[in-house]
Image 1 (cartoon, rainbow, N blue to C red):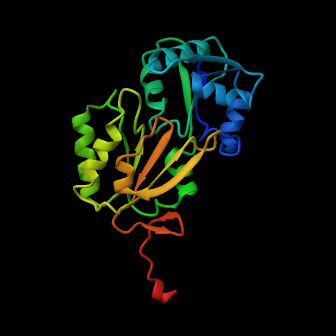
Image 2 (cartoon, one colour):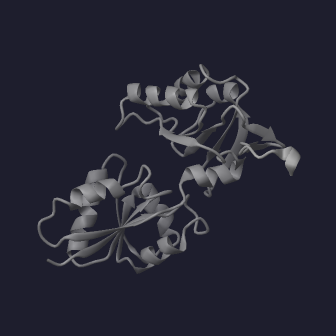
Image 3 (tube, helix red, strand yellow):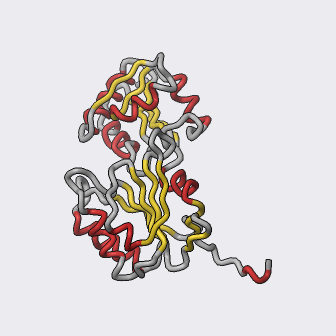
Length: 249
């Protein structure tokens, strides 16, 4: 049976400069680019001559099935994911759905990308120099009770924590609830930060305390960083020491 090619491409934060060379090469040679409409519009600015197919939020399975179908027609297809293609991306779903195909098997190739935890960290300073947890505050696919448990465990273990999907119109109070859980284990002065629209128009970066963060309004395009007990605000930058003995340097 013939195998057709399907790329799962993480294109980074959204700018050409934040895209890996491998991601650029795969998108350049793809016949069709498929993705969430917001993401395809970003990629279209870089590759305006490509054929695009998109769906809205919440239609992920339809999107992947569409891409598989196009690949089975003999075209090279790329599904684009902001940040990385595996972390909260579409790669896992693509493997699941492609496994059920009996004819014209699709070969999947995963192209990693720079996730928001890394690109946002660079804008804030150096907050993620030690052990960390990444937690999505979206309860569309994960029960809130499970998220609460993960928040408490990460906070108690003194991990540096990154929040994806901190708020939306339907989840306006989720970041505040998450901060209240963290505050059971960390002080109000714990150093935090957030970045909105990384590498896109309207990019905004702020370092603040956990107390201030609790009452801050964010959206789905914001990535939030919670420092551990050692994180510092050094001249406006969020920095977590790795543990080097400064007196020996």
